[in-house]
Amino acid sequence: MYTLEQLQEGIIYLIDKPLDWTSFDVVNKIKWRIKRHFNVKKIKVGHAGTLDPKATGLLIVCVGKYTKKIQEIQNASKVYTGTIKLGVQTPSYDSETNEINPKDYSYLNKLSINDATKSFIGLQINQTPPLYSALKKEGKRYYEIARKGESIDISARKINIYDFTITEIQLPFIKFKVHCSKGTYIRSLAHDFGNLLGCGGYLTELHREKIGDFDVENANNLILVKEDYFS
Image 1 (cartoon, helix red, strand yellow):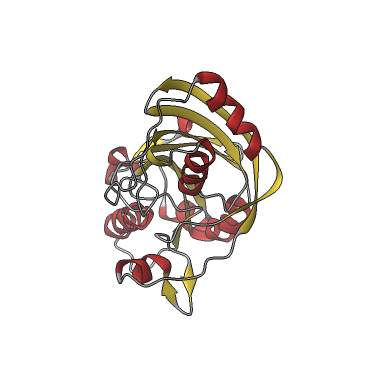
Image 2 (spheres, one colour):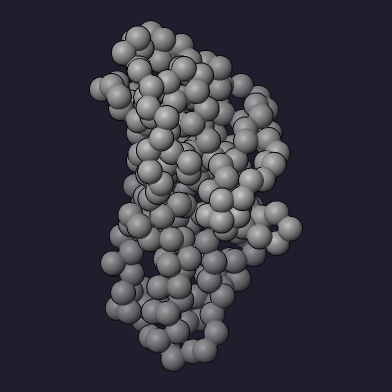
């Protein structure tokens, strides 16, 4: 239970983001509930790290003066679990767009799949973000350019993959756990991993487990953050 004064001084909500919600949907829902409950016109609310609509898991929402901590939280490393489908690709590197480029994957085995993860673990690997992303070029979002069918040169970025483990193999699906730096696109990791295996792949499920020391196990279901959550 929080008072208006406590909210203004600053708090952090740990939210387990539902499927198909955008990160801003969550922020706007919490902001609306606070403004309605306390009958205030303004309250600072922001999130510390976007999750794609098709991803679930930990979303950190900062309120009041704690919005100044957003950059610090965003700089922390992240832990994700998820699923990759091998033998096919999508333009968005996830399930938001239709499958393309089907390829045979029957030659894959447990050893070859696990060995391939080693190519991604290490300091400062180059990763190219997906075209379907919220990054901007000349004021336009990449995904806006992509939906118009236009091409764009995307520069690779330096990121760190601290650990990348395959946790289950049921071809064409593989489950994984990854510990990575800020700025890492797990969709790009899935795409690049499929390319390295020679058959392509895309991300079908993603769940964010941790941001720094914050853990999704301590997060609230958004439905529980109702008006009676405040005092």
